[in-house]
Length: 420
Length: 178
Image 1: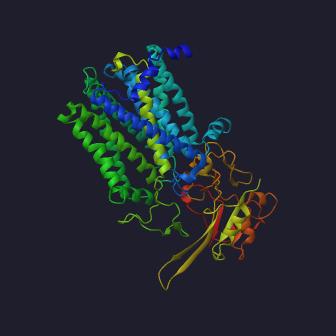
Image 2: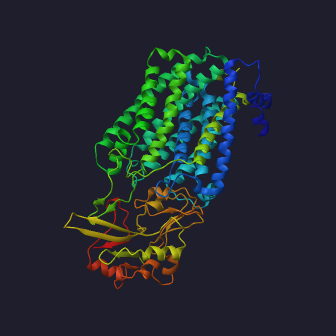
Image 3: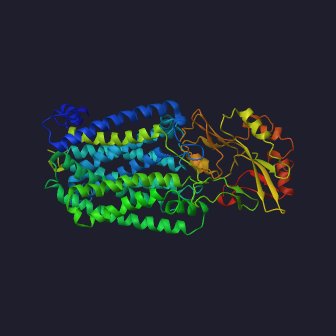
């Protein structure tokens, strides 16, 4: 096995890795900028690791979560990372599983990125849990099959193995096995991500989350994240290495851009109907949380990040003349990807922002609660991520980037992956 | 098999908080957390005012969403229907907190999720939970629903009562007498 793995690694990989972080006067300016970014990323990853150790040692005392808001930015980050991983796997499978030739060069990079983001997602949730190692043991020895979270752990455990295998066979150029494992990966990813949506959608105590379409919504949003990140990766890598989009990557980037534009349109359709149906009335927790987004304290978060950066700017780029320029294409991918993180955090918070304990009278009617959205956050439960949580999140993002860059430079990704 | 339940008489509860203190003392509830609490709510406008008072805690639901949500089975039903947390199996994922419609759970400093247990260590010995034993007005009663001579069974036969959030179909075992 070790001989097989060694054959996937480029000769001189260790030296290449070290050179990645070292300054070289002969480097062209884009590469020098890239190296500085990597050095900063390494520091951020280190700080995140330290914060993770502190969180592991001290427990929930160092988190911003409370008994009223038990799920915070680390859960949102976990959802962000694993959903991105699903999207990367699914978009990457378009080439080597579904035979779309335009996307065949994406397969290895997508698989590598999928594994990197998945691992960082597991880091986030591992940090969030009070006893992560116990979960592994208990999930096997004391499983509860009625729990969507148990299924989430089981399915993403399977996904981790399958994605790693997929990457292995892709690197080994064993296309038959890569395709077979790729099919399993597609099924496993869809099952895992839709189940993740069900973790929220099945929770009838939190009406903002509750609903049968949450699994579908999660699949759509994961595809957006995956396509956006791949588009950004293709454009940015070429910029740092060569200062421009090279020949082979130009049609690939344009294909990804078209795919991303379509997926954004589908996601916008979901978002519009979620807002309209939520704001219309019905359950107080849904209407007030929705109105908090539209006209209340989450106004900036929703309109600037989830509308302007998620849809308006990318659509303007992807459907306009700017789509011919790589820097704008990279932005068209990076902006919705970044906005998706904010959307995940907004989603997790919005389901918990109203206390479940309004005073209920004898007939069950609420007889004392504050209507919170009338221009004031009063009545909304407050949540602020702690410095430990923030460092872990940035550390995880940095870790994913470092894993990906290390993989690009160490593994035999081959010519068609766009690396010299 | 008994079906344990508790009744809270809103006509007798004066929100003295003796139940809260007794519970904290009996169960070592950490600072900043409570397993039970009292509630006062005014209704109406002057001069037609009324005051609703009661003591609340975990509802020990028959169809407990927390039990369904727990990935390790740490949240489970004990014999008699009491919803308990096996702290050795709790990994602190807080899925039960997210799933509970009544916000009755809290995160214990030792890393597990905790809540009212109907004082199982007392009820196993035939004693009442600490809150029931301490209540100075007799507003709280605990017993077996299937024992027609128990106080809770008698109350539910003879008094009007309600449960919290019946629309959630959790089938609580905490009944409020009006």
